[in-house]
Image 1 (tube, rainbow, N blue to C red):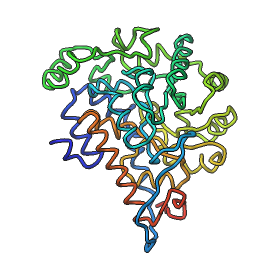
Image 2 (image 1 turned 180 degrees about the horizontal axis):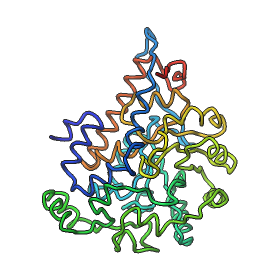
Image 3 (image 1 turned 90 degrees about the vertical axis):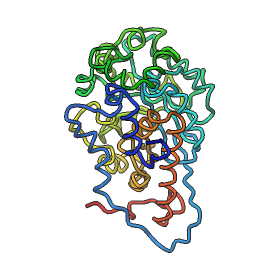
Image 4 (image 1 turned 60 degrees about the vertical axis):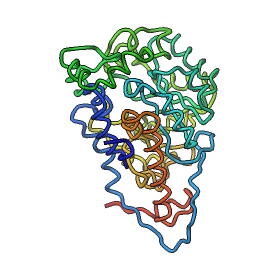
Length: 382
């Protein structure tokens, strides 16, 4: 199977599974506990139906929008995700260039494998930095200052990782950052020689946004859950979030808001946007899907803050449903990580192009010439 045979996210997932050693694939694919919330994130869209209007005479649609102060060419962007050079040697460089090709936002994680400075130099399209607040306050201040100097457009504070989720697939496979060689993993690495050779003989694996202050994750192997539990600051609260917003001074987003109460607090501290997200189902299993929470959050604060639906999106129709409810935009991680693992930048560009084409086609089928025409009048819930 070649990447050009992949026509949707599910196709790229199958190809990624072939290309990656088991521990690495299951890190991308897995979630917490029984993975009920991970499945719910996409299934939630199935309970909502689109009602199209016909004979609209639409030859072209306009899907341009503005998110966090930057005009972009499409309402879907690429969420920040960690450890991308483990999935393909091009890592964040590939994803950044693909995002620029489609004129949309790209986010990098504190746990990125390419530096803040390099991404700042690589693309001129909108850049988002996802801040994990560490116990080391010097590290937190350093990352914020580096993002300012590198010209990042917005900061997203991760608010749902006070403790690491119970990612049982990672426990079974022994996944760590950097990967640790064990008798079980050695077999998987040996049977995926292309990945293994790239990992061993290309640029040395590191977390350059962190390794100025900590060795964990770059030189000392840890599971992601152990990293969260030992390195991140569990005392992070609303007062600290407001202080980070003030220190940053630019467009500011809270990533991981799921309740109306927290959405109102985000407004109160002066946030620009919230990402309605459950961390891809990787933290609290049994929590609701972002799409299921979207309407009540939009109704409560949508006139005062941008609301981004993050997670579970695998189709252009999912984007249309979220926008019709009232989301400012949509974002996702796995949707491009499978494609990155399968084929690097070419894979990411192919899946983003396929999703953009779906949004374009579905808007025409809906009789919607622009995003403003997508409203709840076009939706019915089962």
